[in-house]
Amino acid sequence: MGFTYQCGDKPLDGYTIKRGIGSGGFGDVYLAVSDGGKDVALKCIRSTMNREIERRGVSQCINLKHPSLLTLYDLRTDDRLETWVVMELLLGQSLALHINKHPKGMPLDQVRIIITQIAQAIHHLHDHGIVHRDLKPGNVFIEKDIVKVGDYGLSKTIGAGVHRDNTQRVGTTNYMAPELITGNYDKKVDIYALGIILFEMLSGTKPFSGSNQDEFVRKQLHNRIDFTCLPNKAFIPVLTKALAIDKNQRYPSVLIMLEEFHSVCDQILKPESSFPSSPALSGIRGQPVVSAKWKGFYKKWADKLLVPLFKSALFSCLSALAFSFLGLIPSPLVGFMLAGLTWLISGAVLVFSLFWKGKTRESVPYRMIQAGLGLVAGILAYGMAGTGEVLEISISKPGVMIEVPVWARVLLFYMVAMFFPKWWKMAWRYRRTRVDYVATMIAIVWALLLVTIFKLQLIHALVFAIAVIIVQAVALKTKRLPRI
Image (tube, rainbow, N blue to C red; front, side, top):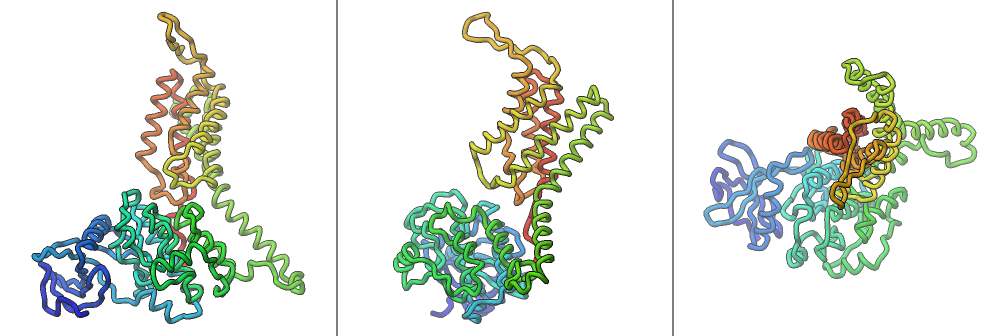
């Protein structure tokens, strides 16, 4: 089938067609030049059904910026009411062509670079509430060692409703997660597709195949994956988790999958850090191996916990000294207790953050843990509570008041104060910003409100406010994995 438009045609105001460069189920793609002289790609959406799906997808992604995402500039309609997508021009080869050149699997160093950039691009989409839904090698382009993920025509907002009739037509069969058929899916369909791509890059073949969607789904649901074609079996745990039929058993985020993939790559590409394979070598290489093992163990926990705990203790002490110097703390003992309580709260949150998943939108168990930490902090804080104002609460009988003792007010303050914020998101290593100023201000206002309600000294709100800031300032933050 030929292209509708030829060189010199101007179907869209401001752009002149040079030549057709691609065609697919969602439309033709042309190389065009703008009136300002910039080369772009123009995509014309063909069918009425696809037009509406793609319009919704593209409208969410206009001007979404990331080094590994194909940039979409504009969404336009011409005089014939045809929809056009104006996007970045890529002249590199698709990942599918690179895979075809390596029927036994691509070199691991290449796989690592490409998968890293794809995962970072998909994480950026997820971070903006978008699911790609059609991730496949044909939608990944490699140009001058830069990987670009393209074709947002099937993307959708996370949490938006999906109708079954549309869902059956989205995605590419060999890379579709099982739940795409039912329409009950989320961002983990992209994690599944990334697992298929990783399997294909490592082995040169797909874990499942089928001549049509029904055959593919049948094999997918009833057949075990054949890992014998993998050149290295160390990747089986990563692939097994990424390709789990039950989406709840897959990785919670694409970056966590990427982190485990990098760990396996490090083991394979750095054989000197592994255990000796022969008893004859154990006497020669035993000591370096043990040293390397413990060095790696120490570095891992130092980065994740020891360094943040040390920083939180240091900042807690400096804060107490600063407030003492300003005359805001009545005595050195209170200053010492302020530093200790602040470090207790921030340190406990940092420890628990190693087991918390930051993208959990709501979690009653997490909040109960936080309330428990608040109870412990409240018990220790009672020593600096002072008498405070008397808090009286009226009951059903007119004129009858109950006086709430100071110890109860202190415990309630710390439990309620700790229960409210989403500490698991503040300390999550993949959070978007180091310090969320809006969340911080809300937490501080919340503490001030509680101090007023429970008629306690302002120092308790100060402890809470400092802890909120310290946790975000010192908790490990990884914007992206290191470049290879």
